[in-house]
Length: 322
Image 1 (cartoon, rainbow, N blue to C red):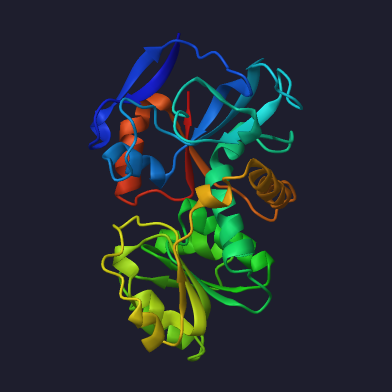
Image 2 (image 1 turned 180 degrees about the vertical axis):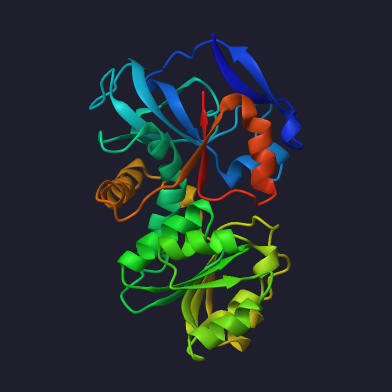
């Protein structure tokens, strides 16, 4: 038997219950991973609350890192004892889980389990945002909302390494320090300042090439006013609630803008694409270009962790230790 977090009905954090379940058996093409660390992401809140429908009951969580302890049939290139991280739909909030071998990424010894558990979902999100959705190049001016969050800190570091002028919005002085350390050249305290006015001041009216927005309702449509003509608005999350009633005519009025709502699970739908993206991510983490700041909490604290996440009280990535 193993310990796992289960959700029997959608609702607040308290609907998550820690239960004992049978140790899974890997099927054909799967490996069994004993989780050493489990990543926590805002998408877990969407699943738990019912904002994203999931079949009940379910075990939350999309990523973790650990040791391969058993192989299903027809598994190649992975062996028992390998250190791995994985990104897969639901099931990670447990002491062990069976996962498709093609969704498993081998971890070099230089990357800890805690980092491995925290880096795939947020790091691969940063990878497609910076390297595919809008290919950031030297001299680009970019605006990152929630710059001290888990994905935001990765975006700041990686974008700076690519030569971009990074502007970040944050909610407190402590978070401003984190964003600055991560590579944001300018930081805007959105609770105290109008971020559109500040962006215009910082850029001397030139505005930004791209806005990366994981916040949603609270930052829209003002984010569009931060973009130069032909700039790109990238909405990749809705921590403050979804954007309502998008009027596509705004894009014309504000400078022939582009807008997109990409999804990590579209970019990683093909396992070969996911592995290629993961190699790019592992490269910048292993060489120190990108650090993944993590806070660890025991799995038993999962309810309190979700409360803090929803209250936007967290910075960096939170990792559950089973």
